[in-house]
Image (tube, rainbow, N blue to C red; front, side, top):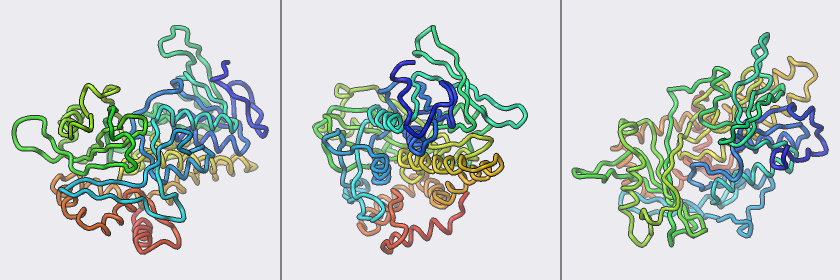
Length: 443
């Protein structure tokens, strides 16, 4: 076993054996690493299994809202500028001929700034933090089929292969634990193998992005373009059901991409990489968003939204992050909800492990999907209605043209879309948003 595969445990946890633990977490993205961090910090023996090796790339906008920033602070991550983080003050919205700059709200519950950091480095920082807490990280560990108890149908471990992706000498191993956390992203082969399939009645998004060397690299606002036009050829320009983003990375590059929802007829008919190229070509030349300034190829990824895979707990398996469809349908943000769901899952598992009998532990574990629905259910229901509306380009055009001329309305919209309110003691906007999420069905 190499040093990158395993680190010393915390003083509270003793490994059951090299390949067994109290909990197995599959996937070391934000959801998996956060889950493993809190489990290990509470004294449980945790195996964190990652199919690739760090650093590794992940398609993302790289922009973090105050919700995600709060989670990093809670995990003890150094988020100073000296540690390589770029802070942002808020969101700049462009559409309908209007350019509106909105600061993140001042709240008791969240910081008033967001952050930017590339995902290859970001994910590795979280994984290393989980290791420091005592989690045992296996990199280049490709998890395959679950191990299932024939009598109960419960998952009791996983089959995996250790070794480089191109190596012919992969070692087959089995890992065992009474609980397994699926943090293996949108494809979540583990969940599928346990019979948990994607709900077709829930929205799905797609993000495509690339990086350009650009003088706009140190912009201290995240930038969102609400009107995305199809200008790839002759004929009348078409307004498309999506939004574009430009996030300065602070390292000489900009992350430029677009997000698109499947609630529109145009979702499947267009090549969104080509749309991104055409959109970039329409930008001012001095911004540098030209093919010769592109630092990596355009890549895309799915955005599983609004609890699109359920139940989030069944037969010893808990779903966190993208595996459970935790992406916010209002704005496409996934990192904050991945980390929050990881913390919630860890708390439920820790409480369950302290119960005396299997029946009592199972009762505690069944609380996990209920806590998720209490936390996000009403908000995601509102989000599903929202994405259906903006899937109509005419509605999106009217919203952009009229909404952006009312700064107070846009401040409310920013709080709503970013899910940034104080649960108690907030202002009138907070009370309205919190009231709406409480009365909406928690499906």
